[in-house]
Amino acid sequence: MKPMKKVTLIGLGAMGVFFAPRISEKLGAGFRIMASGARKDRLEQKGVTVNGINYRFPIVTPEDNDGPSDLVIIAVKGYDLAQALKDIKYQVGPETIILPVLNGIDSEKRTADVYGQEHVLYSYMRVSIAMKDGKAEFDPEKGLIHFGEEKNDPGHFSDKVLAVKELFDRCGIDYKIDSDMIKGLWFKFMCNVGENMTCAMFGIPFGAFQKSADANYFRRAAMWEVIRVANRLGVDIGQNEIDRQEHTIGRLPYQNKPSTLQDLEAGKHTEVDMFAGTVVRLGKELGVETPVCEMFWHGIHLIEDRIFGNI
Ligand SMILES: NC(=O)C1=CN([C@@H]2O[C@H](COP(=O)(O)OP(=O)(O)OC[C@H]3O[C@@H](n4cnc5c(N)ncnc54)[C@H](OP(=O)(O)O)[C@@H]3O)[C@@H](O)[C@H]2O)C=CC1
Ligand SMILES: CC(C)(CO)C(=O)C(=O)O
Figure 1 (spheres, rainbow, N blue to C red):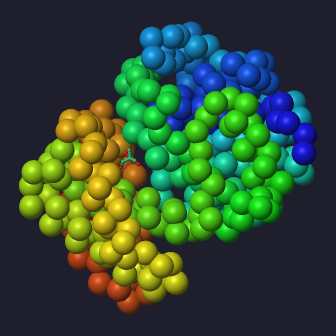
Figure 2: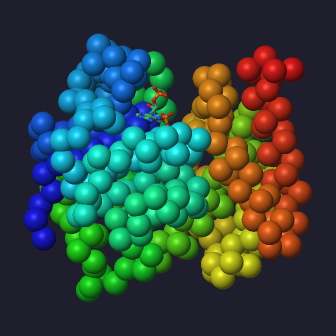
């Protein structure tokens, strides 16, 4: 296994800055951000400021055909994934690994549909970062990326997993390689649907779950809808996973907000279709009732319509 030398990141937002400074420090010019048009101009002129340090990373455009990258990290929002998958075309060669770190349960499949499963690793982030006006503050020691093949055996990691592991070790990026990544993705999805949708719909921070039985009513009801859909698909999540998250949620800083509420407050589109919308769609396909997610799906669309002046 050759150590990775060339890494391209598409999406220099909240999740992008979790990786960018540390990979750039080790790879120098081998680490590039993909961007074009006004986004490229903005990144070249202003860069991003992470924990008080301003960074101007090298930029590569979708048209630059300078040979494939060893790794492409995709850190855009769900509604920008289709475009990102087109943009990275010239960065993907026979040996390239693609790591889509988006929330949700289908970014890996959507990536594999374009480039082939042999290029893709599963991943999800366990970190909360807010990016505002190109600035983000967070503790790089806290938070991690979970990644791997669908199933991972510590004695026999695949070459792809070992290559990414070596890069993250070199860069000091904390990670976990789950034995069952599908279960991990659905666990994270269950938490996101319960928390992000409840907080976005009612405009409440994570702390509300420490105080309000009403907030927890919606959160748990939505999580159980995810569980019933997951179980129908053969994914074994249930009360144990709910209990595990109860512990985590009780320790989050009171005023922290999930990304969906951050998006609404910043006047941006949300990933509601990727969260509640996916549960509703799968529920219909599988014959599982999902009334709470349906209410969230319509409710958050309505908030978006209000924000964007459509009503
Ligand atoms: N924020 C958080 O705490 C967490 C987020 N996640 C998930 O991670 C994913 C990314 O979220 P997050 O980082 O918060 O999102 P952000 O909106 O902060 O960042 C996304 C970035 O992608 C850029 N982008 C979009 N399309 C393109 C493109 N075609 N080419 C180049 N750049 C592009 C955007 O640029 P521009 O601003 O110019 O449009 C933006 O900088 C989401 O699925 C989210 O749910 C997971 C865990 C935690
Ligand atoms: C921060 C975290 C983990 C919490 O729901 C998240 O995934 C998000 O905000 O989208």
